[in-house]
Length: 226
Image 1 (cartoon, rainbow, N blue to C red):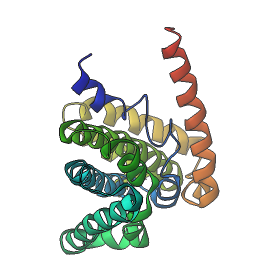
Image 2: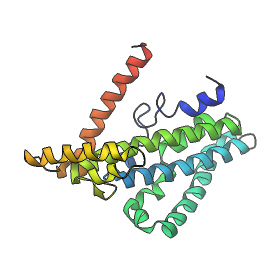
Image 3: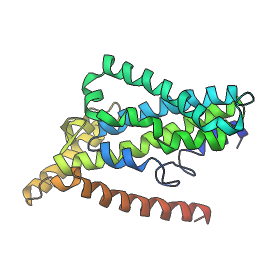
Image 4: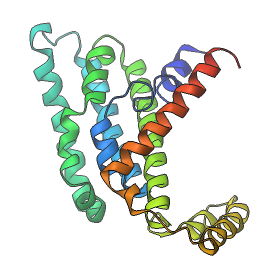
């Protein structure tokens, strides 16, 4: 695998910020009550991560080492402000739903950690690829958690019945829709209803533990070549 491809892909699985590095767990647990929230939070944090990585890499040779952390925070806070205002103007409902967790991106340990551990030491291209890979990894992790919690907790997905949502997916909808409808009918027939626990904080911790265990199991099997 080429160096550029490695820089991009490492954050998706091998160094996934949520499941492998266990970073950014506060917003991960707090906002993932729905798929839309998970995707929105992942993309908002990722946009800040990519932009701050590029700027910090660009300025790394002129940033005094003794005050690098405050400078990192100023750069990150600037991009957070831009993203916050853009979301408020363009997607006000999502902005309201994510609430305080958008400004708190400033202190997200994924972003500050990548600035300190990577962007401050590497070139612009590698830093941009690192940010994009971490963004993909962070977003799919939050989307997975948010989607599962929304289905199990409300019976919906992206704000609509989950079988309808799966059926609306291009190309795969004709396959997934009928399967999901059949499964939903079976659950209803045997009296299984959505569990509100899954959209409450305890549900987030339970699901997070299950997914982390599964992810680590798969990671170990991949490393062992199984």
